[in-house]
Length: 284
Length: 252
Image (cartoon, rainbow over all chains, first blue to last red; front, side):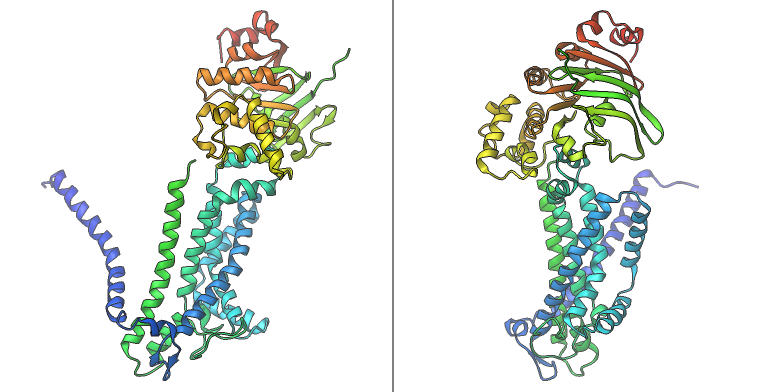
């Protein structure tokens, strides 16, 4: 049997690999393209700043935007301090212990829990047991639990990336362990922690299932008044527009999708920008 | 007149994971001298140094037996690591400036002790940068990142930073191993002036350096202290054959 020339096999291999890479980009480009094409026409100042009218068939989506921002802010307020403290404990205090391994396994599993399970869990715990009712508080806490693994994992990676020699120098200068973490470790891990948090924010903004039972209002054409208030949120609003309300102009649906997509992508780009900015500045 | 030793080490054995790095070491170090510690790789000299300010504490499965007394006080029983390290400073082989300004590097220790007064901090920076022979080179660059200094300047910055904690004992772990001859000369000059105020222990792989700056020299081999004597004596007529073999380059 004749073998192909090395040059030709190179070419074929290159083409296959290149095609595979291209195939990854295609769906993303397609989704963004379709949503832009159909939704851009709907997005204007009124759409972004007005209340929905006529059973959501007209008007804007302001309460859903505000609701999503409240939920995300609440989730970060809850998950960042908790996740950061846990990450500091795991990275700086309990290196290589059995507890550490158990927690790491738990975090991996937490990240793998389907989001609808988080939703039901939030319903049982926050809405039911703690009697928060369907509220921004319950929804934020549920979303917070969901992004906890992202924050812990990225914080740990950021902490572990700080050279051990910084810790040793700090300790040798008579700093306590806590001072060492505060002054010689955390400042240099902050960009990584921030990046992870923003990625978590992007995820929290886009999820539907966790807020379905814990906060999301079907139709509530006013802004939320307190953290115990229900609220509309973009992902759920989009779901409602697409499946529950007859005769909604496709323009409005695509416009809503576009706003949601823009928020999530903006978060991701921000995370990437922060990471590359600090990577360029890093000098060790 | 009896001179009380600054540091007294009695039957010190240190092991990691069951493997002994230091075996039954006993020695006295008088105040205001430079003790050079020489020996081949794995001789335990760095372990010895790091034990003196308990930087080994966090390492895996470390066991210590015997005693180390600083001014008569046991460093494991009468001191906590933080108070001990404020008395016993260390300078590492590779200079590690923290990623902050020159100024902030020097005041890192004082700040952790709660000193906030700008005047005191400023005076501290000048005084100790002068002591480390760096002031003239960096006095206009105090607000620049410490990483922009040259290797030799970084090492002298690290010395100034350690001095700023006001220690009584200085440990040097091969401080010149990454430096060129001129930077090395500057550090050696600093060392011989510093011994007036501090007790210095200098671990070095460079036997010539030990001969140049050490008042006394200790030779470690495979975790044991083979010989400790006046530097002149060690280099001209060592008592132990193994010392002679090492210094004349027959092994190690």
